Image 1 (tube, one colour):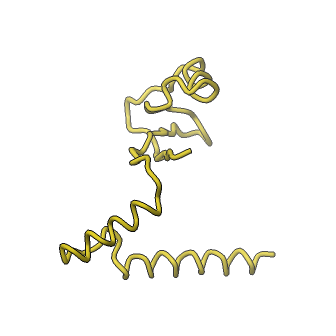
Image 2: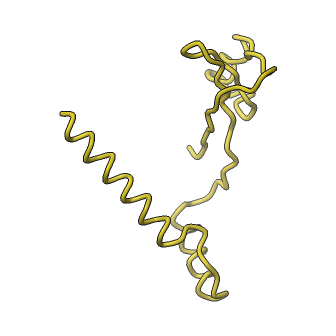
Length: 100
């Protein structure tokens, strides 16, 4: 399943979503593409869907690579950004291993 959600603290005036709508979104998928506001830890949290291009990820990655080579363009994710993401993932893994 290709879907993603962004979670954030609710802004002033954003009201909690009715319980029935939360159940319908979770169990039946009805309204899952709209924002849901819940309370957690004394704060209102908003779950918003992130638009995702639903396609085969490897195919999209290769198409992007070919287009960058043909058009001499910068990739969506630069090598430096990818390296920083990997460095962060390795650091998180290292810290988890130290806890054990």
